Length: 373
Image (cartoon, rainbow, N blue to C red; front, side, top):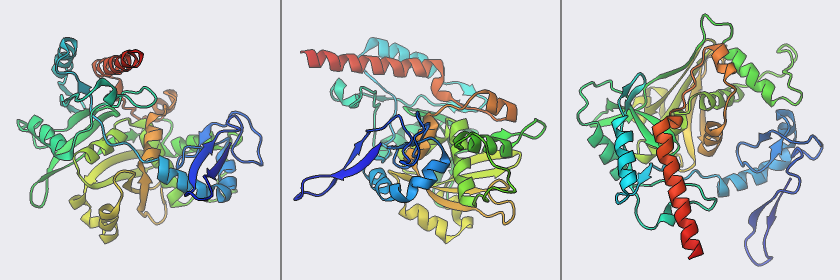
């Protein structure tokens, strides 16, 4: 695989990604076939291991940043849409809305939006269903209307988006109510054979060139930032509501940060609104105020598995497209079960899944019919 900048002499250079050796490790010094791990920032080059990626990074760094800035901005949050004139859509919508009952994890809200314009407006360049994007005021207004009759101040609401189901909880702000997500206990491993350290070790092993992690006494010490990045990967792999929750907060214009705690026997996450983060200091508030919400999220990661000595909190501007990539990946089911982790995947709820599939099929078919005409 080679990545080049190309363009006429008189024109500004444009980025061109050329997949010449897509079946070989992106490190020229390595010839391992079928590399498994894609560069999480630019998503344009694959490596056989973390070692090869680190070795090649000095040569890849500049183009990696250019490609990520140009191509790796996450799309605006999209809701599931329907055709208000389609009888079958109306029937399915009633069935889906009727199933939005209280669950152990919260109350599902029937937040859907009608399609507008032509059918082809909702299909992407690769034939994927794009859903419906609405402005922040509209999205917030519909959600506030749906929760207006809530009597329990601690009620957790689950909002379906095209990317999955996001978690939402109303809290009292300094001047008016705002939103955060509840604290989610993704892993509580006390009393089982493994713990979060074992899960981190498994992840590092899967990224290692030979599948073996060296003994900690002889291997380089991993920095808190290295550990924080790995823990964020695991959170998105285990809980398929993390990324949709971040998209939901973007959709309603609710600034804040993802707060993750990673102790030996406990892994929790929570999206906190900006006013709840004042205790973290001015640097955090400044980072939230200046972040590019179309491409990144402020993350605050702490705990024994991040820094066992100083107990520090790692502040990062984490790329949303990286979190989306891990959100889309699957983790072997036996791994989290062995360690007492909970894997959430509301996107696969049967009725929601069937409704999304109907929109995908219907709009793709409409595109083909219009093309043939």
